[in-house]
Image 1: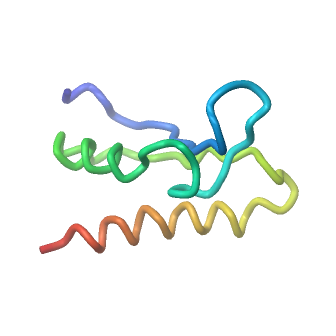
Image 2: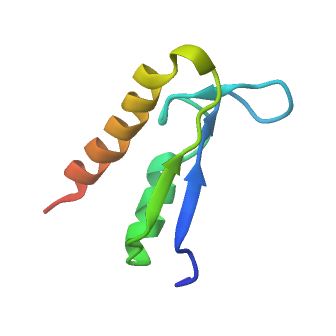
Length: 78
């Protein structure tokens, strides 16, 4: 706690080799849980979306990942 200054985050279709990246919230990672823990720790650093699947046409998927983070944050405001 208190030592995370930035991170690369990715969601995967499944655990193990030969499984590709997926849009945040559609894979096996608990992205919402990670974001909740970062918020609990008052994290204020950068989150890099690590997304390598569909390399030549990945921008729409990356935009959805960013949308997931923004939507999650908007849903947490009280």
